[in-house]
Each structure stands twice: as structure tokens, then as C-alpha cells.
Length: 254
Length: 336
Image (tube, rainbow over all chains, first blue to last red; front, side, top):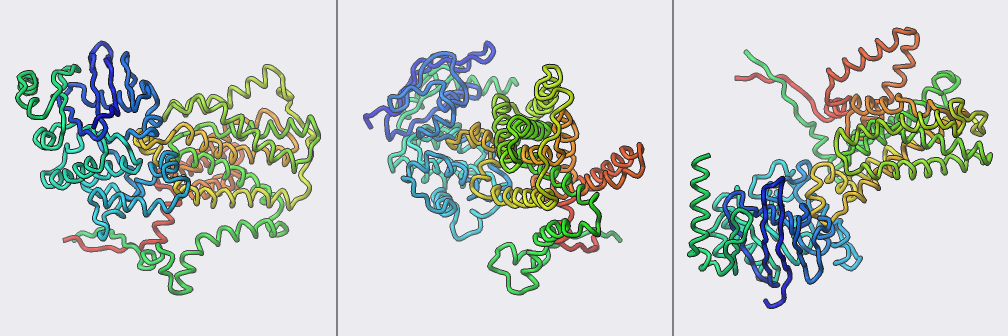
């Protein structure tokens, strides 16, 4: 847990005069599970988009394994081993669940990691789905994505990332929209992946689950980092409490 | 008492989705007939030239050309690129072939493949800068490009200007004229149907449905789009190259709007996204337009009316309709 895998330096992003991300800097160590929290509109998803190349920053740098990846195209960043889930799941609806995974499995990264010899992608896809809790003996992996419940789609999204064999996994509100039991069955999967040495950044609204999993937590408010520390410290941090209470008042006003 | 229509899959359909489950000649026939019958008909039709007459054989050639353009349209649509300019592929393929033959007097055996390949390369290069555009923006550019090239040739008077290039080498004989388009069509139709269900095709469909998810799967979508456009341009340039030698002439009509609009209407009429649909669409539209020649100027009115009725009546496309009727039966059930 000493080696730095991701280093973010003074990142800034404006959307038409609105500051979405202001001077955010942090580091992620290899094997760490970092949580990012913040009230609605605090810039969490923008931060994920900046890290994965979907949005280009106005200033600042992102280093991944010592290489500057600022402003690189999303597919290049994914190719280097950063996989991300999307908050709004949008699978390939007419394809069956396991066929959804063929697309990342077709990428040059996966072909390279498997040393050129490529087996049957369908089998790999079914294995991956089993990893995220699709029962192999049921028909679920073969069902058309449009017929799957939301919890399965979220886990399909996770499997889509794992198909890339990532070194850094960024989960953008994986638990949102999941039922309590779905969350309960997904938590051990995240724990296991992290236990196997995968570095994970979790952007999450469900603080209880996140504080249980994370080694370290960063809190954002209005695009700025307001706290960075152990989960226990963050929970007691006055600034974080104020940000969350403040946001609730604003929501009531709206 | 109320009734409602109920649709049920035929038992045989459920069984033949996995090819292993076929257990009788009847079932094999059920699966093969819709594929083999059109192929056989297409292959036999040129042999019947003494019965149906040379005129209808020529209609077959034009139909195949339009069907190829429709397939090219449908292929681009399956990557999410809606094109209004199949005439670009046709015209560039035609002009490359025509000018090669005009300048060097090479045989069609050489100019047609070169024209197809060269035309596809030129079209792909022309379209690469706009591959980032989506939906209607991409469509507008494709609509404009053939018109632009046509005016360019007209004003600069290159490649024969408004006169075009004539007295090109004819094709060796009638059999070549008739069978080459038929074989090209069959190859392209079954090739596309196969390719789109392979892993490669899944990636293309993924780009159409959600390009961000494909991008985050470490896939360079612009490269895949470029490859797809090149394939579509090959299939679109071939009829242009072929028809140049067939007519022994290439001129500005090669960029005519017809070559853009007909593939589009054929695809919509036949059923988008199936490849068989656009082919069927072309085999309805082109012969229909010939039959209606008897009406003289009123032809376009009848043609358009039939087209509107078809599209309103069968919005899903002819192919989807036939497939449904083939695989399912309907019955009226009482609603309580």
C-alpha cells in the first residue's frame, strides 16, 4: 500500500462559469479502497469524468502509474487499465447479459493481457457474470438485458468493467437504486475484489456502506475537497456535517 | 363479448433456434426454405432470359445494384450512422472505374476491383472528418457530399465535365452482366448477416446503442466506425464500378439523388437492421417502378402512393412482417 497508482494535481473544471471542480488534489495508493462523498452537485461525477477522459480539465494534471493521462481519450485511459461504471446504467438492451461483455472482451487490452491466445469469449463472459453474482445455473446470464432488474444491471455494469481486467476500478454510485438486499449481496463482491489487490475508487451516496468498506474517504463540496482522512475522522468532521445538512436544507427549499 | 388477437410462436420455431434440435426433414426445410428459395430464384432468373425477356433481365441488374446500395445503407445504420448519401459511394466508385478505363484502357476485370477499392478509400477519407457527428448532422453531410462532387465536376470540367466519359469497354458477355451482380448481392447479404452477429458485429451494434459504454470498454469507436464505413463504401462503390462498364458510360448522373433516396426507402420499406429487409425492399421498389412506366407521367404519383400505403400499413417493414407470420400463428381469444 505504498506505491501511488493515481495522482491528481490541482484539477479545475468550469462549465460555463460554474466551477464544477476547484483545485482538487489527492493520491490513491495501490490496493487502496478510496471513498469519495459529497452532497448532490458537489462534483463527484465530474471528477470521475475528468479522471476517465470523458471531460477534459481546464487545468491540473492526472498521473496514472507515473504517466500523465490528462486529456487522453477515454478508450486510451481504459486501455491503460482504468475501468469505470456509469451512474446511469445503459446496457446494450437487445443483447443478452453475457453478450454485453463481449464488447470490452473484444478490446485490444484484453487480447494483449491474454497473450494473443484467445479462447471463447462467451465462456469468459459467463465466468465474469458468475463473479458478480449471476447464478450460473439459472437462465439469468442468457436473458436479454432489457428484461433484467435494476440490481442485476448494476452488477452487469460492474462485470463490464471487470472484463477489462482493470488495475484501477472507479465505481460511480454503484449502489444507487439498489435495494437493501441487492446492496448486501454486492458488498462482499467489492470487498473480495479489493482483497485480491484491485485498487478501487468508490463514489457513493450510501455513506453507511461506504464507511464500512473504505480505507480512506475524501469529501467534496461545491467542487472543492473539504476533507480527506480515515472514515471515522470524516464522519466526525464538522465541515462534512455542515455540507450534508446544508444540502438537505437546499433540497427542502427546492 | 370481446376478442383479442393472440400471437404464439410455432413449436418448431422454438426448436430450430438451436440448430441441434432439428429432428426431421420437415424442420430442416422450415429453416432452410426461406434462405434457399430466394437464392435459387435469383440464380435461376438469368437462365430464363428467353421466357421473361431481356428487358426484365436488365431490371434484375439494376435491382441488384440498388439492393447492394441498400445493404450498404443498412450496414452503416447498424453502427448508428444514418446516411442520406449512398450516391457518394456509387458515384465515386463509378468515376474511379470510368477514368481508369478511359485513361489506360484497362480491362473491366481490373478496373472494377480497382474502382471498388479506390472508390471505397476515397469515400472513407472524405467521411472520416465527420464520423464524430451523430444523427441528423452526419446525415446532412452525407446528403451534401455527392451534390458537391457533382457541381465540382461540372464547374471544373474535369473527368469529362457535363459530357461524362463515354465509349468505355463493355463487359465480356451477357452472363457476366447478369451473374456478377447476383453473386455480389448474395455474398454481401449473407456476409453482412454473418458478420453482424459475430463478436465484431456486436461491438458495432454497441457503438450504435451506447458509444460511451463502448469507449469505456477500451475500444476506439472512431476506428471501428471507420472500418464500418469502409466496408459500406466497398459495397456501395461496387455497383457504381459495375454499372459504369455495364452502361459503358460514366457521367454526372452517377451522383444522382436517386442513388441516395432509393436505398433509404428500400431499407425503410423492407425493415431496417436485418439486411434481408433492405434487399427485399429493393426487389419491391425497382421492379414496381418499371411496371408503373406504363402510366407515363403519372408513374411517380402511383409509386409514391404505394410507398406511403406500405410504410403506413407496415411500419415495421415487410421483412419483419413476413418473419412474424412465418414463425408465429395468430388466433382470436376471448377477453373476460
